[in-house]
Image (cartoon, rainbow, N blue to C red; front, side, top):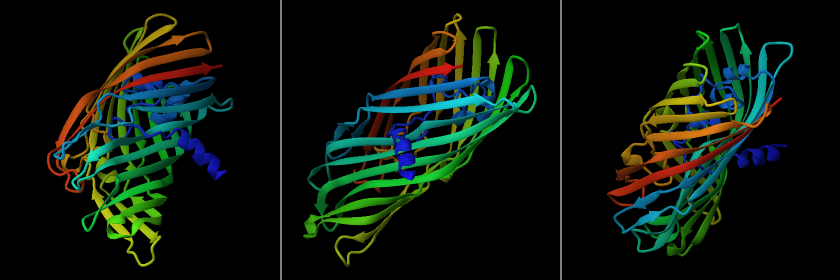
Length: 416
């Protein structure tokens, strides 16, 4: 049963280049096409992952399935060794789905869903190294969530809700794995490190007037200690070949605590405006990572213990979105999301490329009939460049990271 659960979560945890740090800006098409200004709207099954109080707006049975295709247009690394290399992993696919149903006996709606939660990743091939070789530098970190939730109407103004889930994370990394330059450097490859932990989100919605809805959410921190991995250490330069460590853990990564507030205002029969302000506690979630590798294939070799500094800054994300009902079938969406890059320059890493500040979204939905609605749209993550020197990475001084991306978002909804 556990293997089935992990396989299901892994399908929705494809490595992504998330956009508010390692978080995606939204979940499902409507949430994303309003640039994440969603907690006061939250009217489809993505409410499980945005504001579970919004589930009360589902008055029947509702199913959503969505997919997103990421096209990296400029994820590039430049350094003093003559590198100006674009990442080779140009495309990433993500997905999710949810089902919700109103209960007959009480004023509550329950649901369950699978969501690609976020992550980061980059694969840079044949970089010139400081050791006179050409080698690969890569890292992939992906997070998926299986969650169930409930939203209940307290009265005609207040709704409350909560969602509780399992978060699965997996990671792999190569740091010039084919290079060995004793005594200063030995290439490393880490595989199959993963984590399974619980999570929760709480939310409220308050219908202040028939046109104005206010909302707030709280998301708890989810620590993601990665264990059960394998590490290969290239010690061929010392005559030991590639040494395999069978017990590897990487601690220090987490999904952060978040506090969000928002408002949605129905300007008229056609135009809905929405705002969200979200505080993300990265400084507690991303302090440092601790790598420990034991049980080497050559008896007598020392265990590996190393730390890497992150010291991310907290992030305040502002999102605004609109939904314009053009006619009975067609609704148009647009949104803007801003969150200052939380990664300090001195701790920038080209494979943790969540450095974006600005995001723009637009799209639409078409109601095919009373049961089926189709959504589609585009997200553009504005080009961002960071000049940095990270003394813990083998790139010397004056390195540069550039990132720019375009997303295609699609969703199919059915209600009955």
